[in-house]
Image (cartoon, rainbow, N blue to C red; front, top):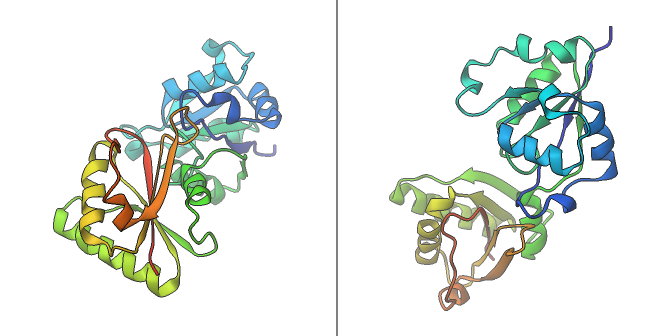
Length: 238
C-alpha cells in the first residue's frame, strides 16, 4: 500500500485574519483529512472550524506536537496513519509549518521514511515582513532569536550589522513578545545612525504595523508599543 501524503497547512497569523489565510485548495484538502499533527490543538481546531470543516471535530484524530510532548514523540505511532495510506495535515501554532517552527522535525522524519511532503501556500510572518521592509529581498538571513544576555545580544547585533553592510544583505530576527521593548532599546543603542531598521508587528491583523526607518529616525518616534505583540525585526546596513 502506498503511503499517505503529509500536507503542510499554514495557520493564520492573527485571529482576525482567517479568511485571508487559506484558499479553495486548502478547503478541499481539509475536507478530505481527518487526522492532524499540530503544535497547538486549540488554534488548529479554531482554524479548521473557520475554514469550513464539515467533519465533526469529535471524529478528528489530532496528535499534539507541542513543546511538552515533542521531546518524547513516538514517530512510529505518529506516522501510523500516513504509513497505512492516509493523508495527514501538519499545522503550526501560527503561520507556515517548518518555518521557525518545530514542525520541521516532523517534516524531516517524513522524508526519512519516504513519505511525500506537500507544502501549501500561506502566510509567513518572516516573508511578509521582508516584503514590506523595502530591504534587499535577494540576499537575506533569518537568524532566529538573539541571545538573552545583554552583552551577548549587543555583540550579536553589531555582528549582524557588520554582515549586512559587508554582504548588502538583510538580517532578520525575532524575539519573545514580552522582550520586544528591550530588544528595540538595544538596537537603538548599538546600531549606527544610518542603519535601517524595520519592525513589523501584528502582521495580517487589523492593527498591523510595518515601520522601516533609519536608526536616527527611530529615536524620534513616539508611541511605539511592542509589548507582548508578535514582531519581526529586520536590519539593513550600508
